[in-house]
Image (cartoon, rainbow, N blue to C red):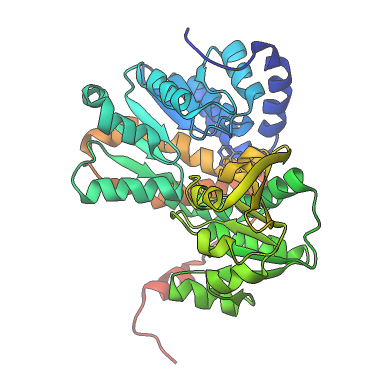
Length: 418
Ligand code: ADE
């Protein structure tokens, strides 16, 4: 079995941590149980490019229980939990190619390694696997029946591929399931980003001006959490609707130019490039702290920052201090990569439970249905989404009401008015 992980001796620690995560993943556990009995993925080779965390370990184990042969690499060079990777290799004979802090060349070599299994299904988080496959490994596409995509950025890339007619197999946008983005993007990113910032800096958030760049689901979650910690939250946006929503949610909304002058913390969560740029750095206060919780490390223009700096030094783990030519200092966390997965452990298991339940069920769905599907991006079937919500409520011991017959009839009637 091939693999490339940091140190297999970390497997014992990994076991405890993967089991700890599993305690909060009851929906995935139920799916794992039925996969174990029914083996719906028998003979299926899966290449997965996901953040290699304890939650992902539970997903990989579930897929293997379903009969799949799973190969896993990282979807970000800084997000790997080396103990989880070691545990999967040692205890579950799952091929993992991921080392926290790997350079870009190794990152892509690892993507190549998982593709070398000639997969039937791809699972991606950010679409680097699918993009590599369509650019450099096209000979493998004939084996592939379908794929899944975990995150907003990946779905945007894939929709663009589909629109340009270059996507060569069907992919299900797991991100767009309501049981995914309502919870993972909002509550997961909200909490884990605060966790990442605190672990990296140990700074007080109360009383500071905290600038959230982007008011999508992730931005909404983060803004809510830092407000709860006593920050004065400022939102920047390019979409007038989202900007209005932020205003009416009670946040101050301003342009990046204005926010740049007053922010103490800045966190980008837009999914776009060059959100904080040179012209913003020059206006910032001394000691400003900047980080990113969007998928790629392109939101903060670090080249622009370097070009106006005379010095850069690491002052703590995950904190780099840039000294500008005028002497002002700006601190960048986690090299502008996902701060929640770099300096903390990513989203809590409880939300990943639903995201990964969708992933596992979508893989099963692809095995059954992919041959009837077109080369485009599909939504998670609504029935499946609702089922995941029901299973989660059930696991939480929460009962809800059911529509009465009269209510069902009322909802489809048009005759009845005042
Ligand atoms: N994305 C965000 N948090 C994650 C986690 N804990 N595991 C896998 N992918 C994630």
